[in-house]
Length: 255
Ligand SMILES: [Zn+2]
Image (cartoon, rainbow, N blue to C red; front, top):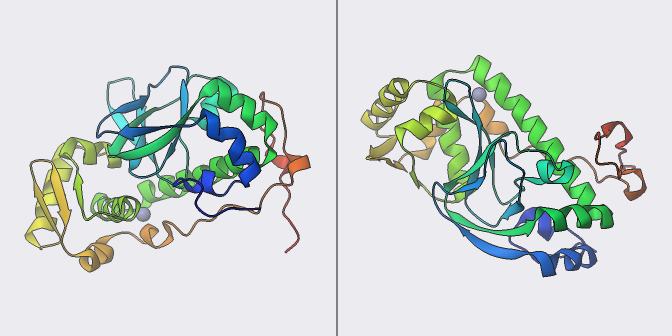
């Protein structure tokens, strides 16, 4: 039976109550502060994070010292699950971009419970699939659309995920989000402010005209939030191995 809101996190809320009860004793609540590093890049994952609210960015570091935002995680997803499951160093850092709260579970308990609960395995597999789809969309967006279009898309995405028109966004952070120079962000933010689309001052950004922002965003914003997880995996078809994920066994339920 799928319960309603046994957790503010959508992934946990969607678990059957009997499976959620396995996790419940091991979950603890945390507050996520702006800029807090939840997972260090290249380090083993100590805890898996299920946001209730706020936005967590996954950040990729480049050899020359730059960091680029590779993805965002909100209350519909989970941070650190893949690295925790495979006991591998995290390929990216996870940093709080919009404050909120979360449930966390130690990586060791998470691994044990993933092997006990087919529903949790299925939910984690769907989440990893969904994030792969979003990463592919973002790769296409980065190649095809202008920095202004992409910034407008990301602001709309942040607004939808945070539920707020106001956000802390330094120009450095916006540059990391888009993988462009800070000067490029400065020019775009100035132009958007001149046209009354946003108000921006000292790292605080407020969206003033959502309609205008939508018109300036690339087409990708229309599909943000519309990507849905595949049909649930059949419990018996989910691999138990923690060596190589085998997605060839994914089977769809009859429609
Ligand atoms: Zn785009």
